[in-house]
Structures are given as C-alpha cells and as structure tokens.
Image (cartoon, rainbow, N blue to C red; front, side, top):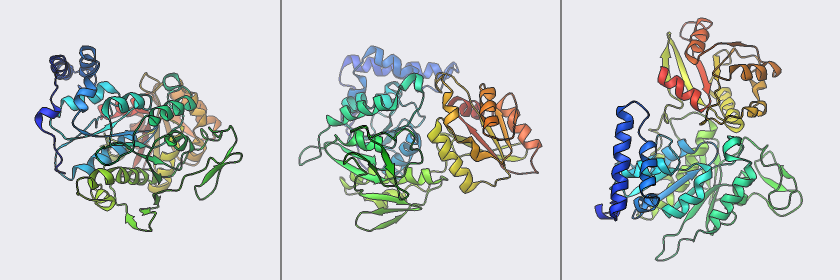
Length: 438
C-alpha cells in the first residue's frame, strides 16, 4: 500500500504535543530497559498526562480504522493491517493488544510517518476514540459479557456504542466520513450500529446468544433461527440484510460473488474475523484504487499467529498449541475449534487467573459449556484452578489439578503418547504467563 502523509502531517504540531511525544518514547524505553513491561502502555500514560489531546494530534492526517468487540479484536486488527499493508510498511497498528488510549498513543508515536493506522479499541473506549481519531472505518465484531467488574452490564455498553455511532457522518463528495462495518448476526451490535449513517452489514456468525435474548428495542424476546437469522417476537427489530456473509470458507457478497477465505489461522471464528477485515479493508483500498474484497482476502494467508495465539511451542517432546479464551463466548468458540482441529485423545490444559487484566469476578466460569470436554483428558491449573476444578466437577469432566501452567503441561506430557499434541487454553494473564515461561 502506498498511501502516505507528509512528515509534517504526522508530526506533533505544538510544543506541548512534542514534549508529550518525547515522554512517550522516553518512558517506554526506560520501561523496557528496566524489564517492567513491553513499553507500550507506561509511556502512553505519561504522554497523555502531559497532553490529554495527544491522540487527536497524532491521528490527524492519517487514515484511521478502529476495531472493537468483546472477542476477536486483536486478531481482526492484525488481519486488517495485513490487508491494508500489502507488504509495504506504512501501516501502524497497536499489535501488542494495548487497546486503550495509552497504547494507541504509544503505537502512533512509534510510527510518525505511517499514513494508515489500524487500532484495536477496548469496548469501553470506542466513543472517545471515535471523537479523537476521526476514523474512516469502524469495525464492530460482537458484544457479550466480559470483565463484569470493569465493563459492567452488556446493555450499558450497547447504549454507549449507540450514542457514539450516532455522531458519525456518512462519506460524501469532498468529505471522508465514516463507514461502520458491523456483524449483523449479533443483535447487540445491530442495535448499536443502527444509529450510524452508513453501515456495511456482514453475516459473520455468532456462537454466543445468551447476552442477546432480550430485544434492546422493546424488551421482547429475540428468536434465533438455525440459518443465523434472528428477529424480535414483538417488534420489527430483526437481522439486517447483509452486504456479505461468511459461509464456511468463503465470503459471499450480496451480488452472488464468492471469494475464498484462505488464512493461516484455524477455526470458523477466525474465518469470520477475516471476512470482517476484508469488508473493512475494501473501501479503504478502493478509495486509492488499490483493490477490493478479493485483494484484501488475498493478503491474509501469511498471518499464522497473533501475539502468540494459535502458535505452537515444543515442551518435553510434545507440540503445545497456545489458545486464548477469556469469557464464555470466547471459550465456546475455542471448544468449536477443538472439535474442528484437535484429536479427542489430545490432552487439554485449562488455566484461569483472576487479575486486573482478567477481571476479578470468575462467576463467568459457570456460563462456559465445559460439559463439551466430557471424555477428554483435562488438567486444571492457574491461580483459580480450584474454582475451575469445582466447575469441571459439576460439569462431569474428569480432570487433574496441578499448580502452575508449566507443571500442568509437563503432567499432561507424562500422560500422553510420545509426541502427542497438547492443547493449552488460558485466559488473558494465564496465557501471558505461559508464553513468558516457555
């Protein structure tokens, strides 16, 4: 991709912004040198303390795409960046998953001349990021319960999204405006995006319906059909007509055109992420004559892991696949992936923590369908392994309890045939802990 802005367009325009940007770089370098982190958040916080308007300054002059949702936003952000990059390094993204303004600022300071910014956005910060970055595209993936002690009830978040999207303007001659690319299969997303002036609806699927059974329009019941369609039983709120739909390993456009989805990431949910990324990339590529949906999809096959997710490491002679799942919807999708890609005899290690990044409330464990693991060999670990073990016991899942994720993997290895794969599923900090340990 050859879109660029002039150096002056991306450089901070005020002394305060320049000092703030220097603070971002300096603090992040110090953080890395002291081994206190990856240098993607601390500096951003410092910069925003110096200049609260720094994100808006750094985003000015760039073409911005925002990606948000409860699940899949890190992967979709990575795929969208790949679709827009085309092998040319002028796209900046917060690819470490630091998805709040501090992480956005750090990413933009680190790439002052990149003309395109693809930013993953925490669900709670979407409104602020829309105001400050004036995005060309906003991608809405899904909404479900997650970190209840921080994000609160799903409907509150839906209302905040709806209000933020109502303030967008549609693209028109001489004005860029914003296109919202929204998952039509999630009623909560559909309700939130209903106020946006221009929406591209995509049938990307939704494996989790439990947070969308009540109609946000009238309080009626949302009925879900086997073909993915849904509608309220009282009012006219229903699944919108889609511009594209993910069907197995194809993206099918409304005009009947079929585009193959060939990606290096496993699972139906990642094919859905790829479809959303391609539909978001298409208008940005088309605006500069660089391609369309097919072009975007063709650039995704090189993405084989995202921040370690879906990667495989070796331990005690066994390949260990690393999978991240942080809430009921995410765990359900991962169980689908195991059904699709893993042998039922493979050992499964489950690791759950409850730190700030995970959310302290682990009541969500009771909403995860762990019963689907009945018959598999399971090891429970992590700081909340006993909570997990209680849930597995009530789910009828035979399991061992082992202190420490590495020890749990070693336990699984000693009870597996030589070279047999091991699946590791952890929530956010449990996953990060294992990556560091291995």
